[in-house]
Image (cartoon, rainbow, N blue to C red; front, side, top):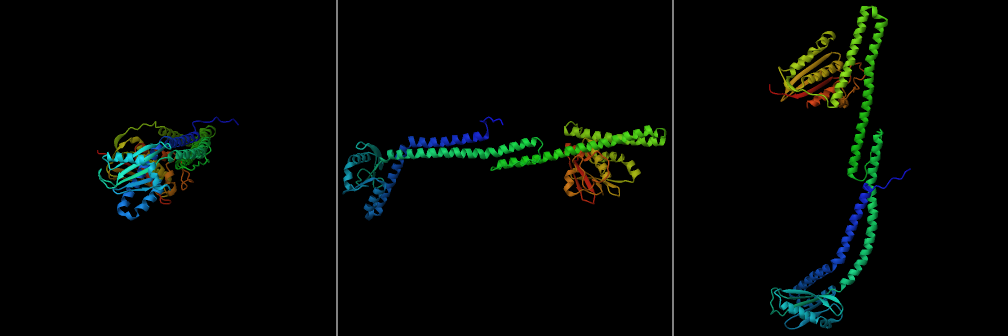
Length: 476
């Protein structure tokens, strides 16, 4: 079996690639933040934290003076900061280490400089980041008056020194951790990308293969979605399409069988009676006339089949032309009924006609007459033993309704939607020996659809059927 060339445009590859690119972008952003912004971020965070501690100390100094020493020492140890409070009488020093007040001398220069900045500033607080040359680290020095809106005469000043020396070691630790995180994230991203690409592409490939089988005529194939709503919806739509194609194929085969039968029967009859005339009845005028009449009837039947098939073909290819004019539906109905008068007289059919004086409509008069003729012919073929056909024309609001009613065997409810299909025979009438092309109601449907007319059938088994259509009334 020949190996398939790798497809760089497949959903599997592209979904995998996009996921990997997304993972690389996220990891790169994390590295960028760690490499270039962590120093600034750490300093800003430390300034904010120091300001918060200073505000807490100020509050405790005035609200809980008895416990201020304990609270200040606890804050210094917890946050690893040096605290000094200068009052008009003395100074208080709180160190995070065991060095105690001796640490004051290590920060004397920084505190003196901060006090000088505060005295020359219009603000109530100052903060400054300086380099500690002794151990090559940075120090955050914060100074603030203890009372709001204080001036240079205020002797109560709070100093906080927060070393920034953990930044370098923290960055080193974070970079080592980030290396491991990056490695693990990359591996997880690769595995997850591969899994997701497989999960997305596999059901699509299955649907594609099923579609290929369907194109080869395998209508029993079943489309399956998988994992995603859109794929499930696609599979459901394709299953419906497969079912409709199967029905179409069945109807096509059925149509070919029916057309072959309908054409074969009259051709056989014509040949048989032509041979009878040639061999037997050629010299017998009476017999010859009867045989010739059969040939004529079968020829007319054959012509009717070909005419209806041609009409259906034109309608399906949208090649049929419609010439709409204003005409009276009542008068058109009377003209159609006149052609059935001889049938009523010879075969004892009763055709009742109820209508208003007029019903002006707009449409192709000849094609609407064909609709009425097909509906009446259908009623005559399937009417009951009473041989009664009722034709009603009623005005309903701005519409006019044409009904053809018979008292025949009726149509089962579950088959009503199928009667407009070509060559369809209901189970109730299947056994009847009726002549016709099997295209009459299908032609009716096509013509009425072209006219945007409403149509339908109401029927109950044993109570006959009512075929109807509606058209818009127009002003005279």
